[in-house]
Image 1: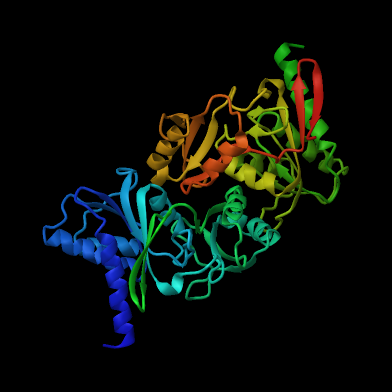
Image 2: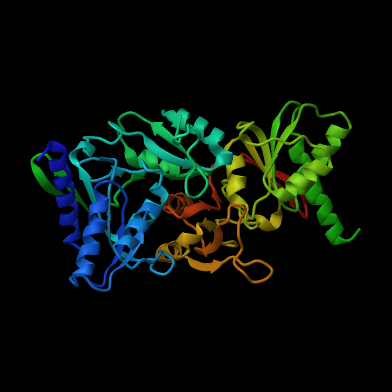
Length: 233
Length: 233
């Protein structure tokens, strides 16, 4: 078995470990990304085999909605079911107190909506996502209104960010589901993510930023030495 | 002269007092409302009479944009001109340290964008808008994503609000320029507006709330005893 193949197996194992927290009758949030997709597939398997009944799921992206529909997971939304029991999602960067950065896929608004409505959020990821501090490896994705792209660029630079407009594959500005732009704001190592989040959150024009603070309860990591579980203290 | 007529004259006087701060070459934010409209009219007058040159203005609403165009004020936007010298706008409730509630017209997102990009924000209002503390007279308008209306209703109630969906004249849910709903969140008297704003700002799904804190530099009040000026200490 090649290394890549083996690594995919570990990601699958991590996702399946997360699914062990899921019980019949739950409302679930379904994340997006290369590890989270295995959780969706596993939930579909358990439903098919009659081992998991009365599940309703809210996808965090159109891609996940399609995958969930393919494996016959009944879908709902946050208007019909505003309270979620468990969400399983990926993350781009994870630090030891389980604060994370998300938004590499440009869907962190919908992802944060689902996360903040969840009793328990479980992040599944491979070990390349672990950092000592947020910002070591990843810029903070900042979704901004089109009309505010200049004012918020100026603002982000004024609080120390190097900024880059998120582009699509045609090198045009990336447009989110809600019709906004994304600015990737590189603050370097973030010493105080709460303070930084507070500053960005207070701005009209910033629709949502990718710091997920105190939202994650459990992280399940796939690494070369196997799968390990980190719990919020 | 009737009382009403007299009161309109005072509002006009307050607005014209605000316009005295405007100098040639400035970029202006133009507010909306029954007092702010007199400022727009006055600026148009000064431009017409050759007393105010090289003005560019950013309206906070479509209504104001129309009025400004009628009186030949050159318009721009926050992408072309992200730095505003002076904004003159109204407010729904004003307390002594010049924190205010806005959003009665449902445009507080655009209004806050303009306010936070302004070197100086001047609020013009009649004295009925004054309170000892915010929340005495006015609920906080909270613009929410449609998909988040249930989760954010639950959230607002959990932090102590009595909530009401904003309706239009046909008793349908009011829709903002950006396609969102407005929840009017009545917290009663707000003892700590900073804390309350922080809680709401941290929520994905809340696009913008109507507490304008530390944004207003000068308030010009039209009252039955004349016009007075309050300055931020």
